[in-house]
Length: 264
Image (cartoon, rainbow, N blue to C red; front, side):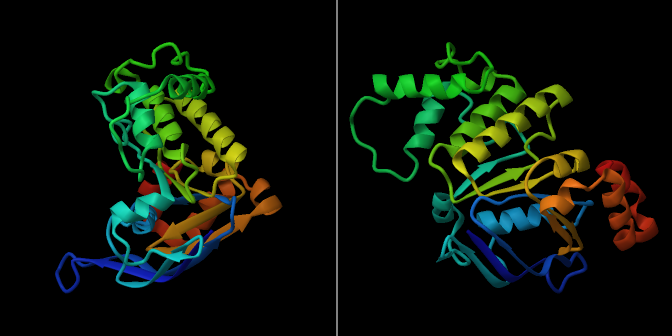
């Protein structure tokens, strides 16, 4: 489903602020893979996700999604292949529009618009069932403005929106980092249910090692724009947080203390 070959990205080249964010990175994701990505500050996690999303174009290498080379494709066109949930619950939705209106926008993404009524009765009923599956009691508040919802409720709605059209690749950008532990656990539970139900190929960035181990079938650790550890299957299931910290310290050395505190 995803082939990334030898991609690199350097910001501010030739200046004192030059920074190599991704360094000749390659990896492959099969259809239905759920990969969690961890790493310290500046490891390249978000840079990798932005490269896949087309937020900016890579300097070298290629990105192929389901057989289509999207390397030079701009972000708005690449969005047809992707679903994305951001760290900030305020992103990804139209705050002044209702839950039903936001879902309708997501359902119509990439389609021609006509002059028919915005949301049909059948659509509204399907949205009610969809929102009810979240278990948050929002199915009777479909016209409520999304901007008035809590962070967790908003992330759950954004998750529904990003998966409504069954994207080729779902990108989760630390989508529980801004939530309290109880709400984060609920959003992760919903994430796993949706990903498993629809067999979605998923890439999730997280700073939480326990979440990285508990979710998905594969774990990648990044450092200095490279993949330094790639584990899957039974080997991943046997992982402990201490194993990941040890691996991180092997690469980062004594300078890893601040990142260790964050990752822990």
